[in-house]
Amino acid sequence: MIHIRHDLAPRQLSSKLAGLWEASAPKILSIDACETPGAATPVFTVRGRYTARGWTEWTQGFVYGSAILQYDATGDERFLKIGRDRTRDRMAHHITHTGVHDHGFNNVSTYGNLLRLMVEERIPFDAREKDFYELALKCSGAVQATRWTKTPDGGGYIYSFNGPHSLFADTIRSLRALAVSHALGHVLMGEKDAKICLLRRLLDHAKTTADFAVYYGEGRDAYDLRGRVAHESIFNTDDGNYRCPNSQQGYSPFTTWTRGLAWIIAGYPEQLEWIATLTDSDLEPFGGRDAVEGMLLRPALAACDFYIEHTPADGIPYWDTGAPELHRIPDYLNRPAQIENDFEPVDSSAAAIAAQGLLRLGRYLQSKGDASGDRCWQAGLTVADTVLSEPYLSTDPEHQGLILHSIYHRPNGWDHIPEGSRIPRGESSMWGDYHARELALYLQRIIENKPYYTFFGGVRSSEH
Image (cartoon, rainbow, N blue to C red; front, side):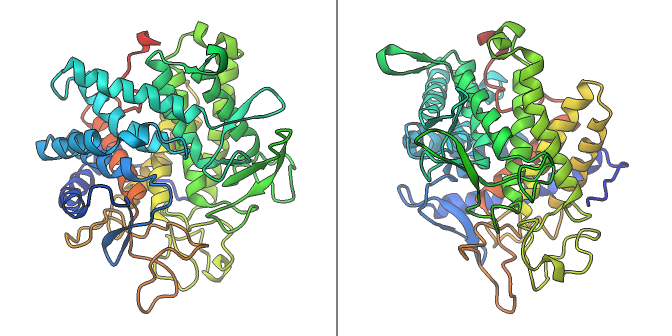
């Protein structure tokens, strides 16, 4: 399990954050220089160069969102221009993309970050530009909410690109699109002009995910460990009933793919932060504040505890906690992750995502006077300290990736295996790089006592 460093404070990571932004800048410029408008989106590196895989184009927002975060952290105007111009010129089709569950990734990372910077007065106020960002975000949340399968309890879920039978753990992070759209006063209009509340769909999806994608050690199946996460949950679309767990990118339905676990860890705490900005009357139709917060907190706590207990000492997980050859790595949970082993790869992208979730949950619990918040907070700092450092941080200017040793799709064999190795290593992913930058910005703002970084920073609580 993670050997939590209780001596760490955010300020102790300052030099590492500075090193990350220094390493990050030429990589963003290099990727932008190589990208061809209209071509498939950069997804992961092969021999240090970003390559594409035209699957669902779910990483485009991370490409341009990374430039926006770079500007946010450093004030370098070159990156604001890249992020703003590319968002305006190349992201429009993602706003109305009805075929994916990834609106929170693509659109909140771009339009959302730009709106936030304007609200924070980090970029000049322009009413038409602000309206443009707000309209994009309103539409994105509503379009995301149309991918809806009903469940027998009156709830439902946003279904994945696999189809109406499929709920992905990943989609908990796309709820940010619905949250921002709702906060901007938008609704989804249905048949006969029915007004469909985006907050209701957000909470229904969160509950369905909590009920079926996350386990609580209550005997649902023979592998029910508290905090275990199933990547995919399968439902019968004729009657809406749950059928079984499944996995697309993990080893099996009964093991935990660690990036899916990380999405849960990041997604629920940020929704708890957003819900805290709503009024009691906003939440009354959904059972009240205690019920809503309790529903979101339960899976967050379980998943964070599982991550801490089933991750190597330095906070970097292997790609799946049940990967078939892990047992061949001696004492693998009680020492730092072994990058150069011969059996199973680590996944640094899961660590970059999970670290932020651990920090957010820790801060949320601390605000409630819950002593367990310190454990989550310090675990988050421990993971951040590792993933933002070499050998995970790529300081080679010729390598376009920022965070090394990321895994995309191990079962499909999509990850590059270098000569002389039996497993993938040494490469980066666009989501891993983006979330490392998001993690670094989160910590930097805390260190510098600047406005707390949230996905909903572009909307005011009074606008609900």
